Length: 402
Image (cartoon, rainbow, N blue to C red):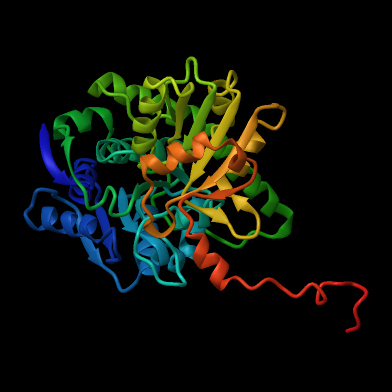
């Protein structure tokens, strides 16, 4: 059924359709409206049999979800930015214990300086924590990915983080198609936990692992991630077959058939890039396509290689970077294509909520000279020139006296 909804409310309703038994709630902008919405649904008895637990911190939110999952019930929580950092220990615990928790990450910049607007720095901070990480392009896809996430998590015994761009999606009103409860019940089976702590049958989980076995545990975690690749793709295909729309999967291809230059990205900015590509192609200003990564973890290297095998140039546009190194997604795309001679360019954009406009993208694509090194799109160079003070050359001269 079609609704005009704020993104956060749409996600809340989608999660409710998945019949979680525990929702652990702690507010942090921009995900607060999601757990608020779930609280309202539970209070109104539109989500029955679910315990809504207000906790004292983000660390407690995920810790309670870990406990409830270990007790054998479908569990959900949400967070953003510094909240994700605060629960970091529990983030690793959830994946290490193979608990299929689903968590929404309302993507937001990490301070300092403090900033509440969107980029992907928070998601990148946990990219190696062992969670499956899915990025939504639209609010419709955010709805669809949450329904798929529970099925994926419970199939591969791994928690899933659904990344939804803060404010750009969470606070935007769009038309979304919400399936009925009966439709979701057909798609998502009743939960059958593989861990179910029971006082009548005592057992232990999360015990200390000595050096003799720790490496094997981490290797198994890696293998679970690799095994999840076909599951993510398969669940996306099953969703498409039942609901009649392509959503989820490993990646989305747009105009790649004859593209000579492909822009690779993640999240909501793909919409702006697609509009820009359409305009450039219509004006015959080049042959451009877009590759949007949905499954960031596990990283679909082989699918990316196949999608980009005929491309002459790749522009990786991302909303995060590793300070002192460069673009994170850029490095991973480069690794996936390590034996290819294709030119790969790095563009950092939208940090801290900075607007990414079609004009910016067109200007970059038309300027061949600035495509050799990492580029900060829309950077205020006058501010950099005013504030940046390079080290004195004498200080770094190895012949100078100390």
